[in-house]
Amino acid sequence: MENYIKLEKILKDNNKIKYIYQVSENLKKYFYPVDFEIEYDENIEQVPNSILAVPFVCNILPIIWITNATLEITELDKSFYESIDQFKKGYINMYPTISFKGKIKVDKSIVNHYENNGKSICFFSGGVDATSTLITHIKEEPLTVTLWGADIKTNNVEGWNRVKEFIIQNTPNIKNKFIKSEFRTIINESNLNKKIEKYVTENWWHGFQHGIGLIGHVAPICYIHKITKVYIPSTFTKNDVGVTCASDPSIDNYVRFGNSKVYHDGYEFSRQDKINRICDYNKTTNNKLKLRVCYMTDKGNNCNECEKCIRTIMAIKANGENPSEYGFLPDYNKIKYILENKCYFNNIILPLWKNILEQFNKNKNSLENDEDVKWFFSIDFEKINKRYLRLYKRIGRFIKRKIGGK
Image (spheres, rainbow, N blue to C red):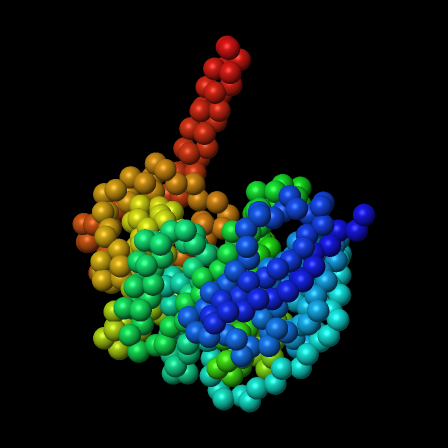
């Protein structure tokens, strides 16, 4: 029996889209019985179905590829349809041990043309990557777009309201667009993780969905506002060897829809470079752009205690800046304790921390006498890792003895 997903109908009502689709029996384990709805902050009824189909297809295609299924669809934007084989190559090159099969059957590919008016849009979460991209293109006066349903679940109203308020207050001269989407709610990521676990170390969201899945959502906005440039901030850099991520230049830079082209932005900058740029921007413009980097809390703010929060705090401090002015509440004694006793610096995280230490050394004259952080100059990441692994092994042996004794 052939595996398939069929987009039967697109319902649009004022600012909402609802996708009616059918999934073959063997693929139902990868989906939850939840409606796939997207809610924009403006009327989208003028947008043709061939463009409205793009968000759906972007989030379904990776599932089609790894299950060797068929995606059936009535209408699809011609530019996007013709770009699929190009950005699919990025996945194939990234995961050479996986067979990316499957196919897409489109009854009609529709040309959607709109004039280039020089407008741009950038994805904006308030994090380091997004803020660096925003200041790079600030003279273009881009629209920013933030998705409710990416890191903040759509049933978390309080957390989302806090994020939305943060975005609006932090970008007072920028026009913001907000989208609510069930694009993660509908997908059973747990079962998809099991499907790919033999081949990759990443989870489904990070390794397969989040880049292309986010990008597709702006196709209707680009059509309405005649936007031709879409910036998606880079997560990693060209120097991050061996790192795989669904948002990558080899994928993002080949996505098209209508007259719009996607740009994977900031790939040439390390995370420390980006923070340096943000600090320099704030100092030279007298702005005080704040940052929202934490994914450990569902409250939409920074917890100030997770590895990512304290990494950002220390990177800002390395510039001689006050992290309290960037949206953090640092407790440096607690940060020292967490780094030395609760962190493991893997191959992805360790280079980021070494970059911070390099920046500390560049500003040594001003930081070596700072009582809050002078201890950081003598931190030994390898020693911390060895101690962490010894503790991990002891805990493992203890658990085995307990289980064996029952």
